[in-house]
Image (cartoon, rainbow, N blue to C red; front, top):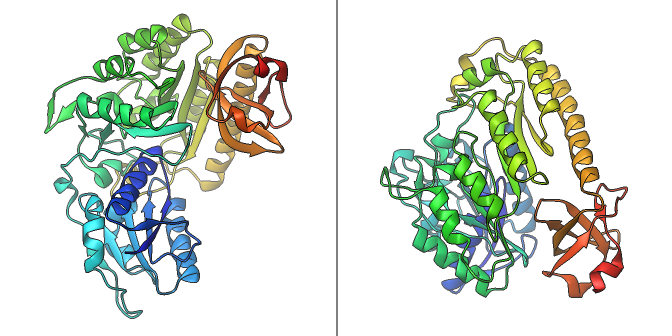
Length: 439
């Protein structure tokens, strides 16, 4: 039996899959250890959304070699599917497994041998068209929160994105299987489940046919006992229907928190990106949410520097976001990716301009978040406290995604407390009176 360590790059979906693969190894009798515990096997689950993620993969391989030069190194994930030959040439890598093969790793590992230094790694990566199976996954690395995968793959060919090439067609689990996983998670004492996937609003496709909808899924999950709250990780605006918004507004367990990708506030750039909506629809969705849930937190993904984003079109995005009642931004700087349509679009935005635009939106995001937090002072919310400390304080999130800080108390870990927000501290977290926590 082997000691196995995992390192995960990228999104919540990757974390859910890493955790599930780790449990598969433990079920076979292997021991899951920390990365620096001199494991026999290093498994690196990669992302390839940005160029930086590829560089991180190489760095982690070098660190693994320092920790145990004789350790077996396997690379899985999106980067492994997109660039298997390139990865196989990285010194220290012994095996590369693509999207259709990564869940077979536990069965293949005994057939692998450490590759001599003058040879390339063994590659097990078939064409993405063969990634047809759906693999149930959820994370169990956190005592308070779990990422539950409900959907995989994507049928949306956005001009800048490699995810369809890395994960294949949209496909989903059944509602019955997801409910089973949710109950298993509840039995472990976890209080919050974050629903994750590549395009979760497209939930319900099995073998290319729609058998259910995302609305039906969340209606069923709302009845699961033992979970304090469910959170929707990210959902495309064209798939976020009025029915979904209305259901969340009156549900028992779904958090008043939406994360809705915008990518650009310019209709011209959205067209170049091949997005399936225009900013008018996005604004309608935000206004509908705020109408039904005035205190709802709304997060936004936005890309700066996409080819064709002129200074005027960027300012359209800035002005659009500035007037929208959203709560924070996740800002991504466009980076060129092989085999994407964006490579053919002109004009190309200079990298220094991309950086300047990114900085402008990061500053705007801080202003938006501060304004949202200030609007909540003297209001009440329910905090789920985590086992995380900063400067002697412990942290937790409310249902509408406000980060709350209080003096550390181990009895509060994984507990929910209703509080009244008092002030914003120097770290940008909301603070509350300790007397409230004792009540």
